[in-house]
Amino acid sequence: MITIQENAIFIADAHHHSLYQNTLDSIFKELLESQRRQIFLMGDIFDFLVGYVEQSLKDNQKTLELLEQLSFKHEIYYFEGNHDFLLSTIPYFKNIHCIPLESQPLCCQFNEKEAYLAHGDIFLSWYYKLFTILLRQKFLIKFLNIFSFFLYPRILQYLQNKNQLKNKSKYVKKYHTNDDKMVLSRIENYIKNLTMPSDSYVIEGHFHWGINARFHCVNYIGLPFFACKKNYFVVEYANYCLSLIEKEF
Image 1 (cartoon, one colour):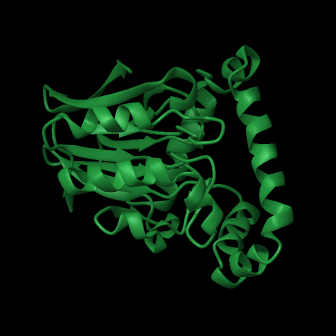
Image 2 (cartoon, one colour):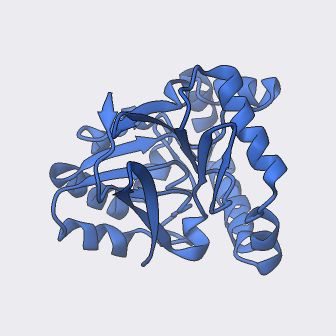
């Protein structure tokens, strides 16, 4: 079982794309100069990165090369998101621990407590689960690649438009919610699907909430939207509790 170390870094939902949302290169360069530490990339780090879609690798080559350099120095765990998946097939990720959707949540340990880590798009509706399974089929990706000259530019345009929307105040207000019912629903989904000891932690992104909450003796940490706030988190231990301290880049 992986032990989460103090000073580990958590980054979620950067939605980076070198062509229109360049958010990661500077922080990766800065981390190259820091001492060895754990880095947890909690999904949707890239806005579109799929292992068998060569153009998505070419577009983000500079950032992928930086990430590869980081992997020679740091201990990196990269959780698949709904925008970046089939990661283990990517040549730059040979030294990175890639956590596919079917292996999430990943149970980690700290101070004899358990923390369940995931991008966050789990324990949702059955049709969403079916969609994620189909989307990750190698034969489907290769078939779609045949039409990449037509599909790829349109996918990028859609994602670029969506990114612009995300940075508007109305979107941020809507999705950085403090609605206890939504958080409670997430915790109950975890409890329903897992055997979780009392005082466990759930750490996930995807929903862009940026909140801490506690229900049913479970501590929930919903990571914020890095692409908008440019904030990451550093692990600190205090009184046998795990705290994620927000740092602005």
